[in-house]
Amino acid sequence: MLRYSRQILLPQVGYDGQQKLLESHVLLIGAGGLGSPVAMYLAAAGVGQLTIVDDDKVDLSNLQRQILHSQRDLGRAKVESARDSIAGLNPDVRVTPLQARIDGEQLGALVQQVDLVVDASDNFATRFAINQACVDARKPLVSGAAVRMEGQVAVFIPARDDSPCYRCLYREGADPEQTCADNGVLAPVVGIIGSVQALEAIKVLLGLGESLCGRLLVFDGLYGEWRSVKLRKDPACPVCGS
Image (cartoon, rainbow, N blue to C red):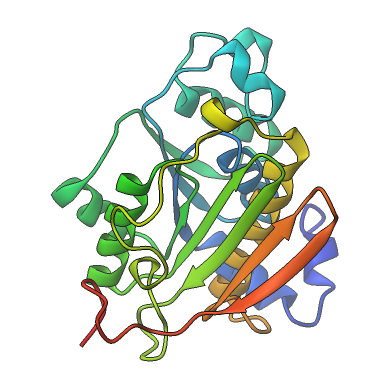
């Protein structure tokens, strides 16, 4: 009660909402710049179980923005570093670390086991695979991306007939890959986008307010501007279209 008292005080959350968070299971794919704030805020808020997937190890260049990790974690698997950081923040959260690049049947099986998926990956191939698995399992997906001084967040809820999916927004090969390694990124930008992803995940889990389903929220850090773009379901989408 004391740990979560500030959330329980919110009439939209209350004791029942907090209990629901404690019983929730979220799959987080990516333990880097976006995954760091997502993992920390979901753990701090009391999401009871996190499965974190990442095949990478902590590198010195990560520490500029990936706040799950520290100098002592250099060379360690990111998922192990994430598990230890979360344990220090909230030892009641159960963390399952998976150091792997998952796809296909393994990804589909993981998605089936959880209540919600957060995509904090950094490439289109992984995002497309995650989207396919979420559509197949009809599980909500919170997607985020950030590069340079820009970022975006969207929510896709396949159980809703009017919800688009990630492939309604991006087609395979439609846009070139834009990675932080090639283009750079300002550290707080990933923190802002990851924090919005965590907020949207909690809103979807608890059914609070209006989620970003059907909208793309775009952030311009250089000018401090937010823009909301309407997204519609594409009837010709190769994943969710009719």
